[in-house]
Length: 262
Image 1 (cartoon, rainbow, N blue to C red):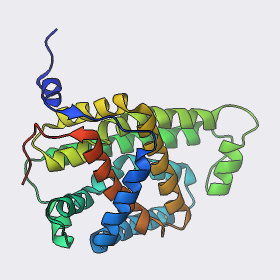
Image 2: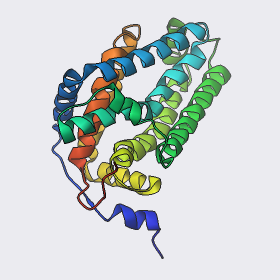
Image 3: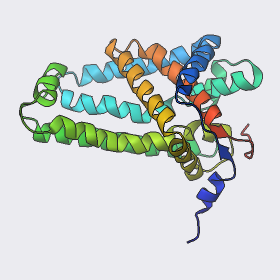
């Protein structure tokens, strides 16, 4: 059977194996980048924290919708960090970066990042609708706030609504994570097609299942901690994870066979 051009393209370069605890090194390197150039990161984090605050306020009495929206946020967050990947890239290349570098990353070029962003947005929207349908359709009573979500969904005496909700969320989140963990910084950094970048991301996950599982868990825990502090923690967590994700990409993908993007 003939292989697709994207699959062939994704094999023009290599991927690397990393030790289990290597994600901790990405966090250290990401924090270092954040401290070297804090303004772009703080602005990204502040905007996302404000968005989260507005979302919470708007749907504060409809937690059945809010729970899906916040978990959906994890799916689309990688594309929102594009400007910070560019900052880490500039720091690695030239030793300096500023807000203009982050803003320039959003300048329309060939539309590849736009395509990827749309796909992530569709995945996030699909999960929000699925989550809302599950909770409103199968919960034993209306779910209007976090306390009711815990009492009615998480601690329900009968049924498996919470387990089903978690399972479906994981079923969607796992392939999205596998498709995007290095794809977006790769698209920003090198000349490669969207599908080839996705195939590369899957190769990385399949070759490093344990370290990438740890990385996914760290992302989830830090993001939830950021949300739990009335969104204020996201001001720091968002740029920290974004810069760390750049270093994950550089560690995991050998881009020697690919032309650099300007």
